[in-house]
Length: 438
Image 1 (spheres, rainbow, N blue to C red):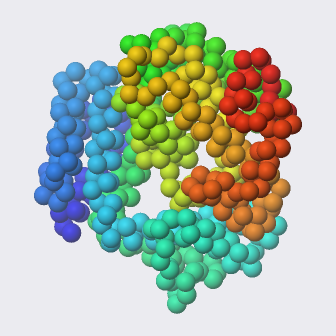
Image 2 (cartoon, rainbow, N blue to C red):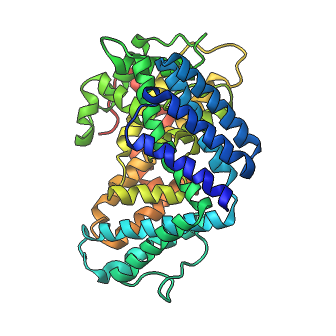
Image 3 (cartoon, rainbow, N blue to C red):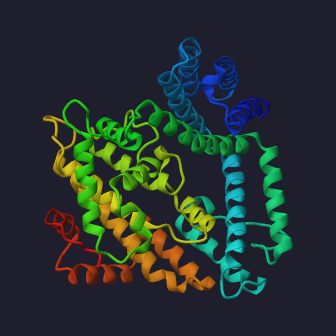
């Protein structure tokens, strides 16, 4: 336990560096010292792959100390994220750490549900038992929350005082358990680190005229095998512009800012849907394409790209925002990336064919379309707790089980009114310049 506390303390020091918004390159020697400290604390308690990852991190830190250039800074950030992921995976099976993480996640869900209650038609605590039912959604959808929560003699808090007690005890137990603290720190650090790595990527690939377009183009060159795909800024702009044309005639006020100029959608995709640093995310196999799309959804739900998103995390993000996410934005981007892959020059003898890749992108588009339709039909019911419970159940079913029948019916009508049978036909319709979301 004391050895794991050393890992937690090293990670806390790294968090302090990030919270101070101190770029690693501005204090390369202290950063290198921290990587050595992390390696020395990890080796006796985790060993194996974690020690190897820490050694690679120390090597990157040494290069950064010697050169101080932006690329070394970026690569050090990429390796740090990978090292944190390795540490997180190593303790994921620790039952004590998992139990504390579950308790903390549950407490935060409760807290967000209570905040959400203030915006419903029944803002007082009389509606709280109904909002607690949202936790049943989590328990049914994610095995890590299968057990009951014991607090104040009951399974769930019954009022504000009991909720506050649960939150305080959860935070206290987290501080007392080094394993749980390490798990929490690795997750928190990786999210903030992703933002820093993305910033470095954009700076490294910026262009004097349009940094977003230049960085976005270079990202897709990495993803679509740069030697053969022939991705150019002109092809990016063409794919985005044609996708915007498909959406332009729709009645979606929220999308107005993303339909005027291609750079608006490009900036949104770069910030929310492209890996922080696309090294190693090329479409080299079916598994790689699937991992990339899981990462896009996960990052959109504010999770580290390589992790994807779990039902618990999805619900937590929705409750944090206090509204369903705007699926029309990721839907628009999914059309653009489908078009980009469709017109890329595909390498011969690759691990995955162009048709297979397009099939995965089409499936992703269909799920995002279902997410948009679910949001649209659910919004009128979100003024009451029961409407939120129903939405969360349907959302988790859509992404992790079977699409709810009511969404299937709305989708069928959606296609029929536009003269389509399926999403593939709808995607192809953009070649004729037609708007399809009317």
